[in-house]
Image (cartoon, rainbow, N blue to C red):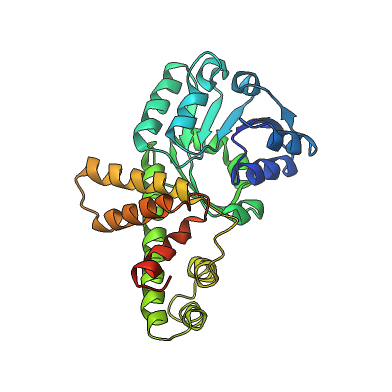
Length: 294
């Protein structure tokens, strides 16, 4: 499998697509704004002006898009993936989107005699650039075998969550919930300590070298302690989309998740304060403001 199309060249998609080029794949690219496509053209990518042309005659198309609406728009219609991808070719959705859309796409691809997998990723743009993403995958086992070479070029590990195609998206939603719960816990802890005269960086240095000596606490701890919210690794406005996915999933499954309600309030308040372009960990500022620190 050597000919790949990549749709969506945002902060995650661009480094992922570049890694595929460096791994030797022939790459077709499409992005709504053409600047990123032109930049990849310098590395050997073939740039297309529409999705339909980009996916014609490829073995595999990868989509890495912001939300359900974006994935829906490139998948359906006369110029979409479904109408233009060859029979038996594969579509891998690596976006953080709803399980419902993933199930719908899987059925539509089957109706078109095409193949489909879901494979969202964990990791920020710097992890994408250094091939340090964690990939969670679900769908038919035979199709997973076909895409191993491509997926392995994008991350440091792939975890298989069975043949129910939307399972990986639920894993992604649950994982993001745990990340944001961590961010909220750090934020409230820092507000408590700072209000009592304890220096915030000293606390982060302590917990990330002892109790929580793991990369995700270290990385987010540094960002939050130093308030490095610009430029955003993952924008707060996209984080609200993820929190909405958490709420929808919990509601559909009749699983109460009260922390999700807290997170929703944090994100909505942050956006109301014109912080949509900040990193999603900037919800920390709300905890500080509520404590009278800002």
